[in-house]
Image (cartoon, rainbow, N blue to C red):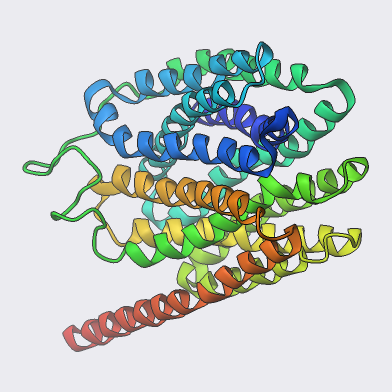
Length: 386
């Protein structure tokens, strides 16, 4: 039931993810309007993610998930009646709040329900399930808008989350336990970032920044008559992501998730760099697929590493922090690229984004080294005790 609710909500999100920026740009907003549309939905997503642990503690998973689906779907109807940029941004803000609820509740419930020994694989399976909407939704939304106009896409985005509301009945109604003396926020131990979580979140936010650039501006970077190229590239990226996330989960349970951190970041950086040649279709599609593979690996690796470093009672906070890094990065990438376009073209913007990913290899290497050191000390302590 949780999978059904999550998939329905995420399908609505991905159908509109690349279409709304196009809609905002075509209505006179240009690149800045496109960036603001993605930035607005991610801003409200981040703000809601900070509040979800408190809401779940007060009202339980079932009621909060139902509210998230309503917020994600119903506001999309507003796009059918107006294309003014302020109205579009208001719709994006409302839908972002719904998205924040859906992703945090889905991730936290998965981590709680799956046995610890198979948690990375369980997260990988969940990643595949919620990745399917991106495989279908991203390219399908663009194709429908090009063939039939924006209206059918917006209507589908409004209806889908409402249709899966019945699945929410099957979710646990229990409220997450509160730790005595710990505020009902994402704070743990008196700090926003519990020990060991900052670097994985920072690394992940770098690759989601790049994802925000890809889904928002790749359809604008190609000529309008070549929109099929953007559709194919986004399909390649969104198809590679869940497959890589599932593979990373299986490999992580067997060999350790941290081993995949550097390869995942290197693949994402190389794929992003390939998009500089935006006029060469084979290179763009291959680059998007490679970026998607790196993105999928890092989704699973960073989340599994963060869950490994906290107590079970803090899983909700980890889910909120990881999703915060996801959506803050996407929003920052879309907004930053939108304003950068005033001074540069798309190839330079894609090159600078690739440079950010290359720079993120440094904290990835430091975290991998620190994580390996901790395991080695634990092994020696175990041998000494034996």
